[in-house]
Length: 495
Ligand SMILES: *Cc1c(COP(=O)(O)O)cnc(C)c1O
Image 1: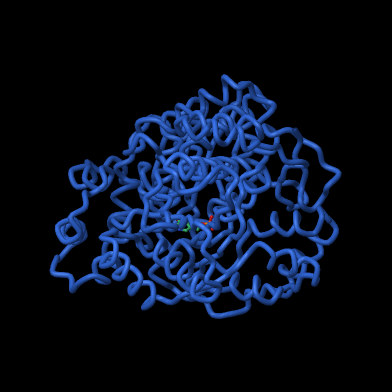
Image 2: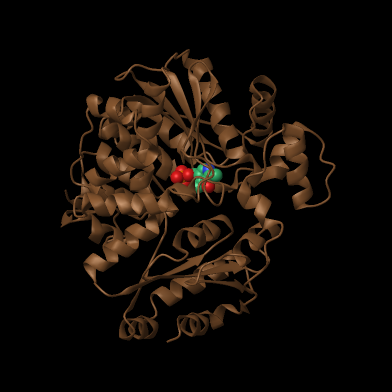
């Protein structure tokens, strides 16, 4: 099976090349040329299998240039003991017809672990195919969460090195503690004197610095990126939709073949796009409900066909969805336009120059055929956390709460009775402050106090990554100026 680019559909490459390259040279994103299929018999059969078997079955369809043994080996390394439940993506029943897909049982308690736990193996194996013997070097500038998720994913993965830069005063205490206590022989963490932009600009400059690239080459190393547009981050996300469908069959919520809806708290559009791909390969999904916070670019787009990022940016209590440009949307539009690479290049140019574009009526119609969109603000987010806790005794984080709120809006408007899967993207403990203050006035004085108070009040257990953090010993104390970053990278790589 082959991959092409959303902006040049003459390109034909295999999955290893797509993953090792990350982004196509003309700026397009890699997408499958055609879609594999999972039959209903197969879904039925998989409903009696565990997550790893399901993952291997799905991933091998997309990664045809790898052997099934290799795919299984990567799956088992990724979805093993670092998850705190035997099923890395369990389904929680809220009421008849509403299920929550918990994607936060990994080492950083958020759904990015689902992809970032396996991506390092995919990248490393892809690099070995494309340029054998080379070590893959990952540089990350982080405003908090992605850095830790990447550190956890890459630690001690063969043939990889990872260096993470974070703004010295731009991350929370807990986020900082998570990063500087990271384990692994191949990892490094450094604070940058400056803000997130300084760190990010610094990393981008290093990536394109010819001298550094040459130095790496001479030492059999190569830069790669773990960012969210890499196909290797998207494809593992298709698995949990297949798995959720199998679990619904298994627990009798649906019959095999019956349609479901999914509601996805959305930022960069990766998670909801993976649901769309799951449908493409045969999971019966009727409607994709796109949930946004106050940064409601996508809500407007799905309703009107105009994508317009020229608007105020809001800082909300669901920060991972505070995004004005959703990169992965390009992949959906490529599909809906009938793989029209010229058209996609045009509208993406418009986005770059004018900050907006409007899609054709045909595309808008097909978009509306399958997608619905809603948004809610912070006070409704807090209200839905409280309502969900009071009605069901179930604690949700702020991102999940946006989805719950949007799902309720959808049902109120449509009276749709289809079984719905709400995607839960973070543990409530990851946003303890916002979650607890939705339920009661906070008494605790510091971060860990709030975590304890949330646990006491909700009678839920503190996830192991936070429980362990309290006693973890800091390991990294490096600090550098933005212009010292290149030197730091070379020193750390020992070249
Ligand atoms: C990244 C993230 C999202 C948004 O997912 P996208 O794939 O970017 O749409 C939602 N919730 C949480 C907690 C996240 O970390």
